[in-house]
Image 1 (cartoon, rainbow, N blue to C red):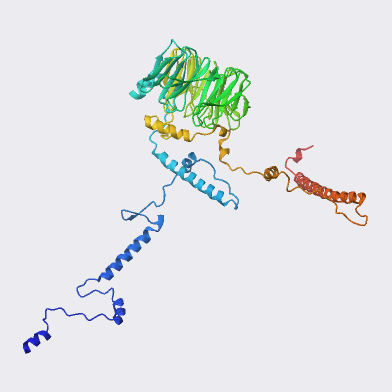
Image 2 (image 1 turned 180 degrees about the horizontal axis):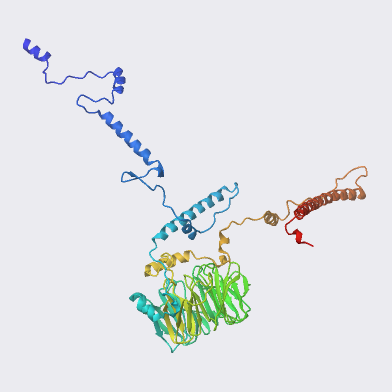
Length: 594
């Protein structure tokens, strides 16, 4: 029994000693010994978890410091913050100036305008950054030393360029139904030809695929693509016709008779036409209704172009004037005397700043539309019958059967053409192809496609005019364009006025208030003398009191006018005193006076 009790009392030497139970008074000591290492040289679990938390907090604080310290692969960013954008590139994509400060009481309008400014600035920065990614750049034809580029023929250019570009120079011999007028679609992919003797052809000119070809059996004055390559308008001898890309007649619009020239406004879906009866008419092709019919009272109209910036129509007349028209007014917005003879052709660049005109006086003039003043004037020996401006600012002028292309006509004086080419017969129509270095010329023998290096815009907007869009993309674009259609009432000379706040004057507000109430609340009430007793309200005393009040009002008016006169007289005397002081100073030239 004794041995057994000894075994129970004396534990084995290999058994671990038991820890005493934890007491509340030992917690303070445990807190002090947190960072101490145990017998095995390892830290406790609580100490490790606390260190992990501290490291996470420190890392989070470093990340929250903003642009001051950014980490790339564990190293600080040597170029913190957004990339720098040059001022020139920002100015290139500037949309509008910042709005002026709005009074404090209009806090909702103030917040709205502030958000609009922020969005506009963000869009400007994004466009400036993306501009670096545009893959194409415009280039011009440059000759060797003492070599004029106008002496380089189209055959030499087509031999020097690649096969794809060389295929864009070609001739279509259509002598039976000429001369021809032409029009390119907005994407620059499709070509529309209209012969004087009734021949119409739609061509995918890059692949040389014929879409449709018909003969309407009557004379054609002009042809024009509508919002897409699915429909086009033809001004025939008597009426205006609409056809689809398969040559099927969709509409015959008899309200538009004797049409000579046409222009299509793509963002308004308006077809503007001028006729031999001196009428300017607008047709909304989305609903098929006539928007406006204006009698210009200027005779036969056969010179017409549009300003792509504000959709104003420019008309040239036989008396040498050019008039600007909008569908909202029955009178011309502007009348400019440009030539001593009749105006033969008018063209406006895509920025809407410059206008080029040619007349029977054999002069070619460049105007600044903002000031309506001439900038340059050139003399052409035979005069220009057709004018066309490219997206990059090249000007083509046709004189008889010779086509000349000029460069920088509004910035520097031009002494010689940039390029020249002779066609077989007289030019009747001419257009630059969008987004291509190509000039299409319609003449008596058919059609000629010329290569003009540097004419087209190298980078296109895929959301607006995409030359490579599919049929599905074209349908989606058409729906979106119809939803965003601009009403014709918004066509003005200065489109920036539409974005400004209309701040009515106090006088206008007062007039509106009078019209709404039916009386003037601020008008002075008519003086009615109070009735007095004891014979003091006789007719004579009432008139005397009325005269006295009227004299008081008159006295205030006279006193105010006299104070104004005295103020003006005082300013005049001070001004004369200053002039006398300045004249009294002796000059070095006074000794030469007699």
